Image (cartoon, rainbow, N blue to C red; front, side, top):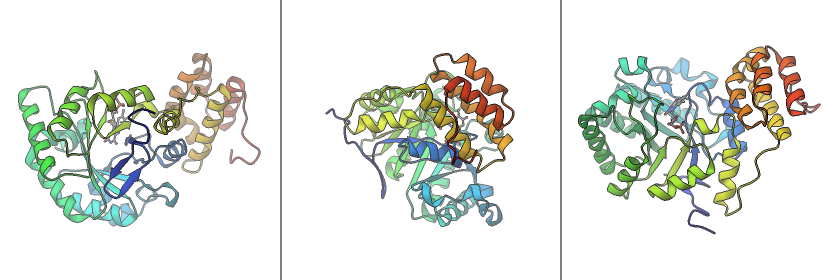
Length: 339
Ligand SMILES: Cc1cc2nc3c(=O)[nH]c(=O)nc-3n(C[C@H](O)[C@H](O)[C@H](O)COP(=O)(O)O)c2cc1C
């Protein structure tokens, strides 16, 4: 028993069995990958961020990627945009489609997003954050969360704007405030600053805060929770090719010991399952090509990382993929598998 055993996270009416969620990751958190992560214990997942302009368009909103699957509840939708009215329409449309919560992205650092004054750019302008937040708040009944960074840049002006935005959230609390401990200009480089995240929780103890940045193991999860006193943690890059991070976290939050690392055979079986789920989203060759960015990460767990990685990176079709898995992981698909 320790002080994190049994810790839960409530996001409005949504109860998470542990205070650890899967971050939205554009290009990675597709429905197949979300399903793998959920099976390993991720209590909440998100597709990658959606443009409000698209989600507010009824024709685009009907596309499968904008519709949650019945088996994946609870699932959140994250939206991006600077126009309060369009953001409100997008949020209402996604709520109607069945998403269980709406998250507003004030964090994206992509150049094309910044050029349009959206995402992480909005941290320069607290008024635009307030307007978008209040418009979305009034448009939906499901829990509303926000994701922001510790400022646009390093300077004093950026820091002042960050605290002004946090003061606003303290007075108009979202159901969860997620802070990524990097600035917008830092993108994904350097180290996340968890002191500022801790400082935010100290200044606003009643605000429910989750932190994000450099979480690669269950030990990182526990130490960041304990050091900062925040309410929850987001796993992001640390779950790519390592869904076991959620299995480990679930065990530790139940008060059990951290499980043994997965055997090579288990790694191979999960990779086959992952590709078999992707196969339902993409055609077979596309699934294998798309999976390369995941296999590069899965291979980090293999004792001879380079060999399977070279074979999997060269795989062009399902036969190549299965043959590489058989050679390097010693497993084959079940006879009833879709592959
Ligand atoms: C490839 C990639 C895609 C991302 N996509 C999103 C996104 O769609 N929405 C979002 O809020 N954050 C996104 N992020 C940021 C992550 O959610 C997370 O906050 C960030 O990676 C810091 O955590 P980490 O250092 O543990 O990876 C993305 C990050 C990466 C690397």
